[in-house]
Image (tube, rainbow, N blue to C red):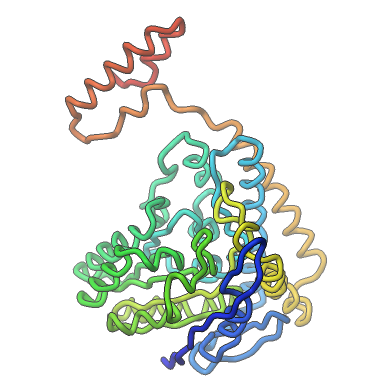
Length: 393
């Protein structure tokens, strides 16, 4: 596998009320030869010497459908949060190709360790979108059984899932299983010590794990240049395993690169780092205001590289999909949005005392004491009968 070096550099670009080290630097990196690309922003199919891929028309339509439905679900979740139905939401807008392409590259027996933004990957693993929303509504701590779909619960702590994934991958290797593990994290998480430790253990133990970094250019308000002075994928070399940068808005390139990386890990060659060079079109979460730290010009530049638009252009140019198909997908997305709206509003609230359950497998005298104190406190109100709801005792 040939991965060419990419030089880092900064060029000032004006944002709203401040100067940011963005603009031409990001543009220059996105066009460098080290970036694996199979579908240009103009929807033109190109070839790459190291990452050939043969995708059927049915698969191409499926990738388009996946991205459209994922974007619609994401938009509905943002609306629900604005209406007070969710406490928080982390949008994936703009990152659909990175998530759908990589998710569709996995096999059922592979294991996925996400952060809190991998809604598209969850979709490819057949996790019900409604299950993703319970934690953000505050009615559960996860919402799904990780072992049903080999898709771990969302991880809010930045970077810690890379260690979980590495440990799991080490176990896979010890068991001799024909499977791989993939761990997702962002460019901001690449500065965490957990990620460096995961890289070290994965390399030393030749663990079958793919580290998939979605470099969406911003770690909340900090640009990638504040996370690394070299391209993130080049960090892998320092730990002794290969890295590659792929156009994260090109679903075909992401699919091809992730397939190759997973096979690299699965075949006993050890870990690999994939940097999906993409862009977060929306806010970091619904509590964030990105206009405070990045320019409209930068967002507009990346909007021209929209992953869904470029695939649709290709489908239309090649005659792979017509209006009937697009109408069908639109109708399906409307139905999904309606199901999500109704499902969220009808989610049952947990029992008042449920917070004390499932803390320790064998119980705890301290938790018992805290439960009793809370029961006494709740009993001091007129509706004291709710204090015993859901205690299980």
